[in-house]
Image (cartoon, rainbow, N blue to C red; front, side, top):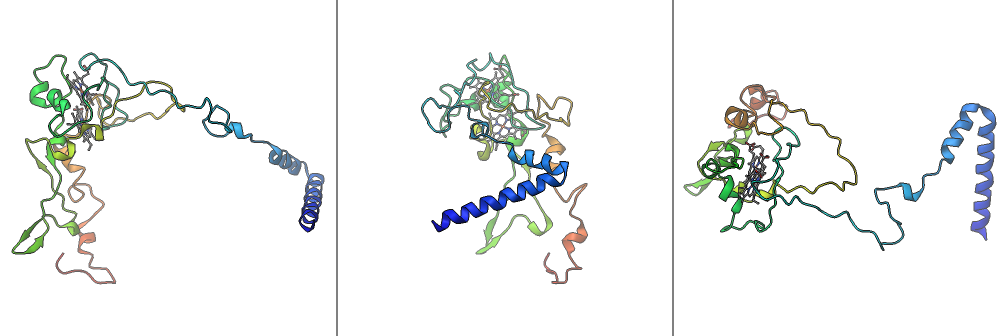
Length: 236
Ligand code: HEC
Ligand code: HEC
């Protein structure tokens, strides 16, 4: 009973407040209209079916492309140096296993070269080793790079790197249509053929990763850190 009386008093107070405001200026009454605008539950979210039942509610069907490798049309890259989407059917190729990677069977550069139509060869970045080789010397752990100096380990090799073996970690087939929300993102490609080709090779690949060389935010002074009130390490 007590609670109901409290609510009633609250309502009266609110009504007085609204009436009071409405009387004052025109601007205030426009504000009231704004406050009364109703947002229905149905208008919220992307779901277009009854939100109180799951019956008849199902996600749109995933529809991967069905054209076989060699008969598909490449998909425009999402942005400069984005991993390209797989444009062809991958039926029977997945999951990739240590002894069964069909992707490499067509996309390794020395194979792709002789195929028609030509599969895009696996790029140089996938043959580059970015992992520093730390080790133990005379029982003491020794780092291969000096992180205080922002050193990086970049080594071009002839071998497809293990980190790139599982292609579908980064390259995925694309489902067609049935988008809940249309993607309006437009890429600004920095190289002329950026929509169809990666630019990560040679110095473009290494320079952008080496934060010390060329245009860098980290200066030698930053590394020396001699102004630091906390002192600095002589070693570095
Ligand atoms: C039978 C040979 C073959 C196999 C196996 C194959 N591909 Fe392809 N792939 C192609 C060809 C050829 C193209 C070029 C488009 C076309 O002609 O269908 C292509 C295109 C691509 C592209 C788009 C490249 C670009 O420049 O846009 C990606 C990514 C790709 N394949 C990844 C894969 C992955 C990942 C696998 C393993 C799951 C795989 N492919 C297996 C032949 C193959
Ligand atoms: C760790 C993520 C990753 C993995 C794993 C990976 N890729 Fe890529 N791939 C990329 C990215 C990012 C690019 C674009 C930038 C570049 O060239 O490195 C790319 C580019 C490519 C291209 C286009 C090259 C060009 O010249 O335009 C092909 C073809 C390709 N990858 C095939 C493969 C295949 C086949 C595998 C498996 C053996 C694989 N990738 C594994 C991330 C990956």
